[in-house]
Image 1 (cartoon, helix red, strand yellow):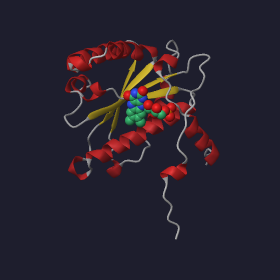
Image 2 (cartoon, helix red, strand yellow):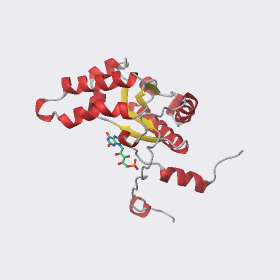
Image 3 (cartoon, rainbow, N blue to C red):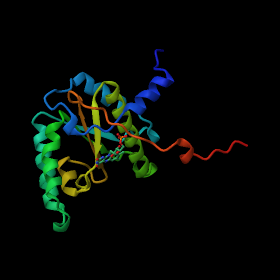
Length: 199
Ligand SMILES: Cc1cc2nc3c(=O)[nH]c(=O)nc-3n(C[C@H](O)[C@H](O)[C@H](O)COP(=O)(O)O)c2cc1C
């Protein structure tokens, strides 16, 4: 089987960065075939009990405007006056139009009492990392956004979620804009995060 080498996989993992919508080419769409492959890769994530607890609601074209309008409406309606920020409100209206694809990623509760909710959420997080790595391999930029309004009843109703389902994030996808300097990031040395017991 023609698998990527260990070094290639490491390089892909380390190359992935959060690319904000403002750094995407808003005018260049993403082919359905590429999107489908990225979503299929997401679904190959581990999941306890094979519940496959993910659901993807893909917004492209005019649907992005409806998403932006809804986010602004829900933010306005649900944010306490003292916490309301005009700059956040503005971004919610702009971001979905700067990226050609915005995917509302949902944990659809499927394990019943047998599988704890946290494990369904963990499985979706695994799927979203698969999604982001696959997108990165395709040359796409991606960014996981989780504004608190995703957890509101109003937004859940708009997405037509079941009572126990949760929208865990919006994944913005798009081709990096011309001339973008790929962001750099750092991580703590693994020794600072690891305990070894060897004997
Ligand atoms: C569960 C989750 C939620 C996130 N939500 C946000 C968010 O709401 N806003 C944001 O700017 N970044 C968000 N991020 C992206 C992180 O800010 C980003 O991964 C971190 O800064 C490291 O940068 P990198 O992705 O380029 O490695 C989220 C990431 C995860 C895993």
